[in-house]
Length: 560
Image 1 (spheres, one colour):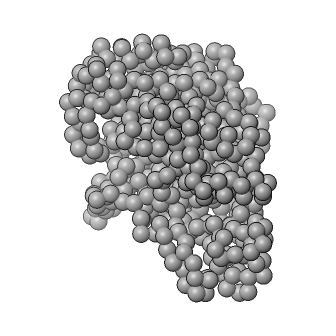
Image 2: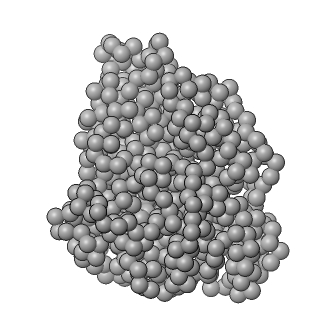
């Protein structure tokens, strides 16, 4: 059965029942139909005196076209925890329409480890992503309108840094020209998930914080070099109005009725890659364990979870799970080449101990990345039916020798929560062990030192090179008083380095930084590596070509 067929075969519980399991009152749930809803922020105020549950981060090795199963592991782990006793919730980001209609497909898990309603979550859900685009582009329109009507703020058209945003991957929009009424300049679109508005929505602690952050957005500079903020354009209030409902977390469920929050969707490679602080804050008051997923490998989403999200929220994780598969590690070890949608070569799907051993150092780095933040690590070995038992056991033992507190084989994709019970027990033990969570760098450090620390400790780089543009950007951030911000790295997720072709655990490379962007409202500086685009393109055969509507039944077909 396809993932869509499995999801359709499940009869979801009414969303009121899921909310009741969390201890939410009927007044705190705003239903969107029968199987999804939003949670009022009043729930956080009412539950603020309840003890918080334990916070579990799920991350992974560097992804490959084969997929490592980070989302399925997060879902499976939450279901497994519920099966063995503790009350658990999973918190995830909403899938992006770009990948849904592009190369990756949807982001609701797979097999027996899914969140539902699958079609709704992968498409519009409750409209949050559209609200982000509307809010973002309202500011874009206000900027150009202000310039057209006299430019009383003295905005320099050539020093405007605010792009436009759209939800679909479209490489033709990476560079656009605006007409004379806007001062005749070049501009660009970024995908919604790279929008500063999306980052703000995910990081805001409440309505007042959302409103303040929107006003703090720096859209560019005046001709004299002073920053121009959204507040000065009298636009931030209207932006907040468009995002008022989008700030409320979305509640859905897994295929086993485990509560799931799906909220906000910043990408892990070009944004901070984590779901909303508000969803986690509410979940932690409603459950004994909250399982949350960070985008891509520990070098990206997890590092930003620790050093951006946790700084702002004040929350500390009790443990982290690093997901790995035999076949992905074999690919990192040179066991074959594969493209998404093509058969897996024998060298990756069958026995290949040599390739597994060569690829294992990639997992070693990710274990070390988590431990560098003082958090105990559990390695989840996401197993497939043909995986050799001897290799699974070898990997389990090697992961523990490399510093993992425990390693467990999980078969959640095939078996749902039952298949992740061993993993759940390992996580409970790890979360109950002593830990000393700490951040990787001090915010008072110079920007360059913070970037170098991430590159050398998280990626294994020997050094960092800065293009002239990046040097100018860092100088400007310092002059404007924004140097004491955390860093959001934008680089390829396919390698620990900046080069997607460098698999395993590359050494001796220099990380090139081409620019450093100021996201003052979100509260971080984005260091962009060479080769990174903030607007993806569609592949030769987009997934959207397989998606259709059965007009006789009204059912969606081809969504994956």
